[in-house]
Image (cartoon, rainbow, N blue to C red):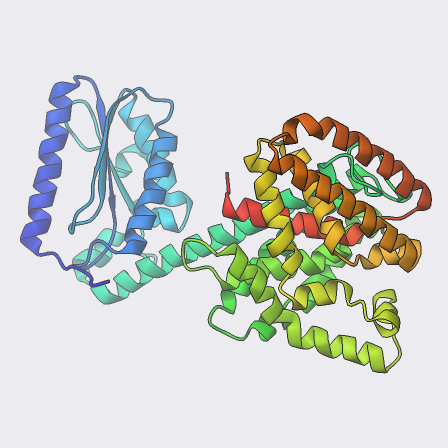
Length: 463
């Protein structure tokens, strides 16, 4: 996009138009306080996609600060001289200025917001008038007016610094969003009830050493790790996907330690630490400044892990297997989560997400959509956890039962009876839960895939 430059005359005319608008609003709304938001961007270029995104963020923050005030007027303008917003509200001008100064000073991005407050008598409230210091320079930290008068820094340098602050802000916000949604996915997964053989709100399923509260403790302990994985992905954008995966090794080990510290030594989410961690990093690698495509991120998981997972599985097949998963691959060629990751989590892409979407579109609750999605995932996945607990025959019976239930879900979605038939399906799930709990069979791998599906859904539709 070609950046438009503005002249000094154009900026003077824009300021005069803004002043005229302020005077008109004061005349139309006696006693009102006027709040004006512009961007503090040095140089002749006043609008870029990044500046517009930063302005939209600032506008949302200003509206939140003004939410308790009676708003008499609100408007904004977007032109080559930069975006502007203006509000006329009822309130105490100095108190509003204090709150808005706190917004300006509260975050690095806030330093790019220029928020004027005009009292009802027409005078601008100065920062120093209410006890706030002068604005600081973006580059050296000295008082900005002093640097501006002395021209201590070039406009190109200040312009680049402003855009670096904007990009850093949205990258941090994205990583935080990924971490929050990964934690939310784990909490929603354990809340989905009744799940066959798995911990949920109703019981502990096939497990004796954990319950729903153990999972809550674990999920809360892991949020920072998932955010760290997203940051790792951001750091490897346009880089080597395998190197990004390698960078998750130590954080993953530390996350396992955090999980066990939170749960008293119980392994609640070891599989999720791997699978969701890789997915969070893949989301970071695909971040374009605004969003990250979920399907592309799942496929990228295969790019990240494929070569290394293949090497590990081949070593397990040829040499001495050290874990149950490696022994299972050695004996039966079942690759478990390694194969799922290397294949870009095809089950989540091709089964989990389409089923979740269809169920929610049919008006099901998140709980019931989660149950139906879990059944679909169980029907198409060779769950090594189920094999470990029930043997290959028990795991196969589980898959056969899941296929029958999944076919029933497909039928009720097709004929539009999903909401009416769900109570009957829940009864069947409760019966199945009792059977698997007695047999001590738990499809924990499929639970992790359900959490991944939920995370993908939350990233597609953040609200």
